[in-house]
Image 1 (cartoon, helix red, strand yellow):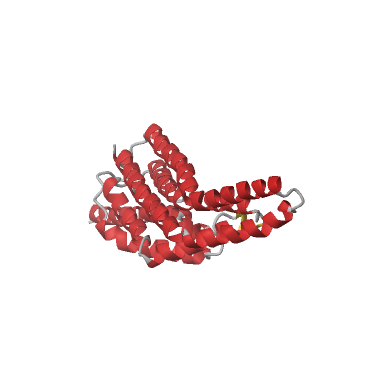
Image 2: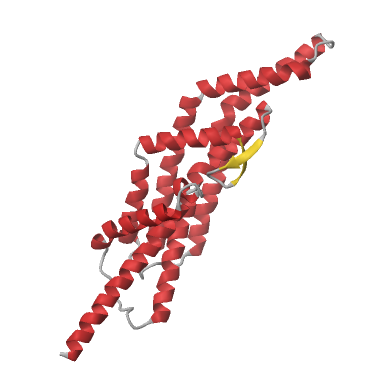
Length: 265
């Protein structure tokens, strides 16, 4: 009778530990997702979302073939495993916004509006164009249901990488993150190319006008002209920017599933 009670107690403790491990992985991902990583989202909200998602994911988790109830050291190693998986997924997801900030800074530099202000999404000083574009695209992203993809990643991460079956292949992880960081530069250039091209043509035109009419105050005239042309081109190029954003999101989806496949081995 005592052995049966002990077995039931160990089973209950192990279920609680598995729930805690799932909560750690999901909470790490949620806290690192771009829409939740800024301080403007209360920590209690992030924790509540993590707990709710864990309650939904836990019944669908695959069974584990090991016991952790009586091994604190092994449990700690599994905790580190879940944290690492969450960091990899959350950090890769953040590349969805980095190219927006980078492209917005290039646009602001060419237009001449580099006044810095606090960006709530990066927690660093940024220009107004980066903040406006980031907020606008995040609203469009949430309105189109793109956040459901990250919920899908949460669910499928436990199917690809069950608890305790993670493969520590850091070389492949590094390769995927390096490719993501390199592609961010390319996508940022595509994102800012229309405005940068228009400002370049405007600068060349002003230079030619200065050669034809040296008495013309080109520097004073160029500031409002660049701002006007840059803002007009930015407004008309928004559909193209949305297409670039969607293309980068599709690339991110492939990268996240590549991370899950690498972690499975």
